[in-house]
Length: 253
Length: 284
Image 1 (cartoon, each protein chain N blue to C red):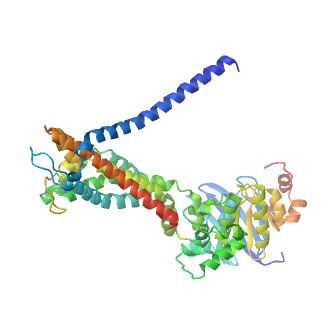
Image 2 (cartoon, rainbow over the protein chains, first blue to last red; image 1 turned 30 degrees about the horizontal axis):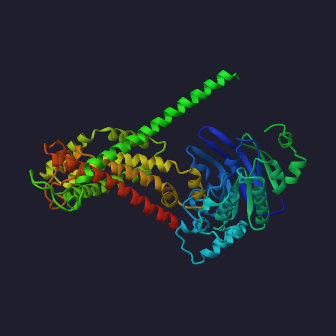
Image 3 (cartoon, rainbow over the protein chains, first blue to last red; image 1 turned 180 degrees about the vertical axis):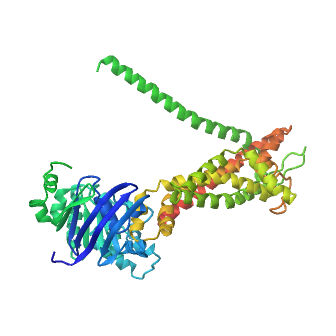
C-alpha cells in the first residue's frame, strides 16, 4: 500500500463472554481514505470498529486481545486511558443519537463542554463542525432548537458534526445510513467523500452498493474472520476469495 | 369470512371496548367523586382563619389549623432531605453500576421489602430509635419516619427512569471521550430528569398523607411547636383526631384539612412541573 497507515491491527481477537466474535484480525487501514467493512449480520464488523476506540469493552463480559495501533501507538497498551483514546477517535452510530436535552449548538459543543473545556471560540468550533457535516446552511437559524427536532438525516449529520467538532484523528461510522432514506443517505455519502481529504474514515455497512460507491478499501468479514481485504475496486470486481465472491454476488448473506 | 363471523367479531370488539372505557371512567370517576365530596364537606369550613389561626379549645367554634399546615411542611422537608438524596443516588447506582451484579440484586430486593413494610411499623421503628433515646416526640422523629418510607419508591422510580434513557446516548457521550461520571451527570440524568422528578413528587405526595408513622413520632400539638425537636401537629394526624371526635364542627374541619392537604400536594406538583418546563425551554 502506498499510503501512510492510520490503523494497524495485529492478531486482534474479541469475545463476548465465551462467544469468540473476532478471530485473529490483521488489517492495515490507510490514512485519509475511506475503508468499508462489509459482511453478513453477526460477522463481527461492528465489534471490529468498536475495538478501534475501545468501546467494545463497555459491554459486560467483553474481552479483547491483540494489538491495535493507531498512528503507531498501541491503544491497548497497559496504562493507555480509554477516555483519552476515545477523545481522539470520533464515532457515529447506527441510529442518530443526538442528546435530547441539548440544542443543536450544545450537541456540537458537547465534546468540549462536557469535558469542562470552556473555550472562548466555541461559536467558531460549532460553525466549523456543522459546516464540515454539511449541515450549517440548514440549521444556522435554529441553533437553539433541540437537536432531536431535526429530521433523521439531519440528526445523523448533527452526530457527525458532534464527532468532528473535537478534531478526531479518525472517524468510525457504524452503519450510519441504515436508518435513513435514500436522499439522506446520498447526502451522507457525499459528505464522507469530502471528509476523506482530512480524515481517515472506517465505515461499517450492510449495503454493498454503498461500500462499492464510496470506499477506497474494503474488508470482508465472515464469522469473525477477515476473509479478504483489498482495494475496493479489486474486491468488488475480481475478488480473490471464493467466499467474498459468493457474498458480493448475493449468493448468501 | 362469513357474514355471521364478522358480526360476531364486531360485537366482541364493541363489548371489549366498552369494558375498557368503563373501567377508565370508573377510575377517573372515583377520583372526581372523592374530590367533589371533600369540596362539598370541607369548603364551607375553609376560610382565612383556617390557614392563620390555631385550633380552638373543645366547644368553641371556629379556629384553624395553621400549625398543622406548617407542621406538615416541616415534616415533608425533613422527609425529603432524607428520602430524596438517598433514593436518588441509590437509584443512580442501581441503574448505572448495579444492573447485573450481586449488590444491585440485593439492594433491589431489600428496597422492595422495605417498601412492603406497613407504615405503622415504620412509626414504631422511628419511635424506638429516635423518640425513646431523645425522650420526646418531635418533628425530626416524624420526618425521619417519613423519610425512610420515601426511600424505596424514590430509589426504584429513579432507577426505572434512568433505565429508560437509551444506551445509545451513554455510548455517544463515552465515544466523545467524556468520562463515565460526567456522562451520568450531564447526559443520563438530565435526559431522565422529568420522570425522576415525577416519581419523587408522587413519593412525597404519598408520605404527605401518612398518618400512622406520625402518631408516636411527631405526635400532635394544639399550639405552635417551639422548634424542630418539639411535638408537631400535621394535617393527617389532625384529620384523624378530628374525624373520630364527637363534634360536628371538628368533622367539618377534618374535611377542610383533607382538602387543604390535597391542594398542597397539587400545588407542589404543578409548581415543580412549571419550573421544569421553563428550565427545559431555556435549554439548561
